[in-house]
Amino acid sequence: MPYTFDRRNKADAPSFHQLYLPIYRAMHGMPTLDSRGYRPLKMTFEDQLKALIFFHLEEHTSAQHLLQVLEEDDFARDVIAPEDGIKKSSFAEAINSRGLEQLAHIYQNLQTQAVDVLPKEHDEIGDLIGIDGSLIDASLSMHWADYRKGSKKAKVHLGFDLNHSIPRKIFLSDGKGAERPFVSMILSPGQTGVMDRGYQAHDRFDQWQEKGKHFVCRIKASTRKKHIKDNDINPDSNIFYDAIVLLGTPGVNQTEKPLRLVGFTVDGKKYWVATSRYDLTAEQIAFIYKLRWDIEKFFAWWKRHLRVYHLIARSEYGLMVQILSGLITYLLLAIYCREMHNEKVSIKRVRELRIKIQNETRIASSDIARSNFENHQISNCYAST
Image (cartoon, rainbow, N blue to C red; front, side, top):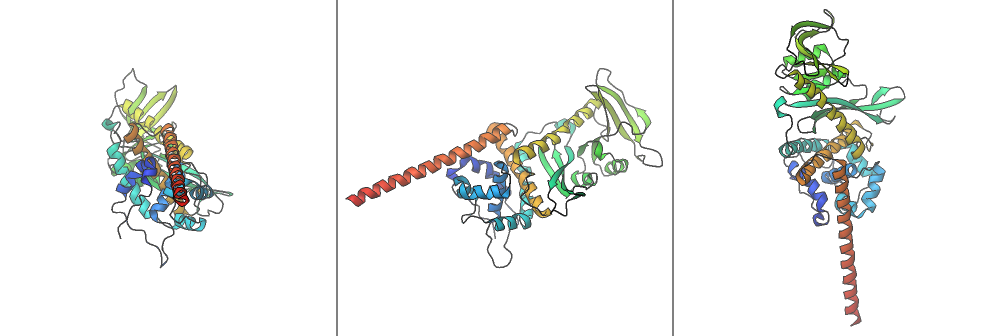
């Protein structure tokens, strides 16, 4: 059964529908979400998706807060919530047990739309993917989110497209989950993963080279280095080392394949970066590592302004639903800000959008109230005659 798209009260909330418009294109080919058994869905997939986008866009802090707004706020009740409203139990059931396949479909298709809209920066140095993990505080009832005694945490493993400044592949594990194995799952051949010291692993450096997956990875300054060949260095740059080496202790953890090691200084601090990119200058390698901070800034902005880590789900399934919806919201904002303002996402533009939605809702409510009053007056006139 194909999806029929909900376009309720579009005229009353044009700014929200402008933001939401890419969803309709992303839904094409999406698998249908059917109810289990004979009971109809109390909350359609689109109801669920709109509620989650609204949750992130408006910085709600809990499911209870969101549900109260869906019941009491004019815009949320008329445009976001199901026509018959939604109960807490139905909302919790939807978030924790369904919609993940559909969200993944939309997330992937929105990435394609974003790449078509957003400019590609740093094209001359290749397809760059920042890779990092981020911990999420979990409740003690979330037994799957193992971390340490008396503490539960989950961990997001994300690949961030540094050329378009958008999130790409996403994985979820318990808080103790190792980060290095996810690199091979995030990177595709030909791409360059940009990573901090926590991803240093000499056996994986060999594996990534074998599979044609490039890397720019900071390493510990104390790492043993077997020098093979020097590369020329520009004496006027901040590069102090550029050579082909083997890393690690022979017979213990030494790399089997040679790689390139670049050393550079920033504000008097030395950085050592291992890489399989031989086609770039040392200055470009240093610049690529600097771009890694973009994923740190994304995590900080995403958590602070879209409230992604304020949990409204407790199951592993539900948490992935919440995270994917947060990434979808960010992609929608990235597309919206580029199309409407020719800018990157900023909290200034997000706040501006929130205010526009609120003002449009007030105007629509005022017009409805005025129309009802005028109709009432006309009815009274006819009644008096």
